[in-house]
Length: 94
Image (tube, rainbow, N blue to C red; front, side, top):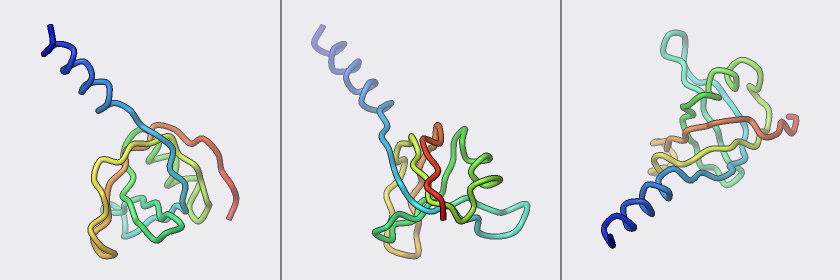
């Protein structure tokens, strides 16, 4: 029973996300373009997930707040992290 509770807790925590705010940019050329979110503290993340396509089309250069979870943390300025964006919560302009 104890193992089952621990497994359920880990499953719940793995699925938890939060909010992240930053500016959207698209780097590279088609077909290798990637959507990136850069936070105010300079961290850069490659955006994946259901909202990535919409962000690339309509939000380039805009500051947004996303419902997302961090998949991989940044490793310095040259190696971006990765976030999985589920939805756009708010567009805050440029």
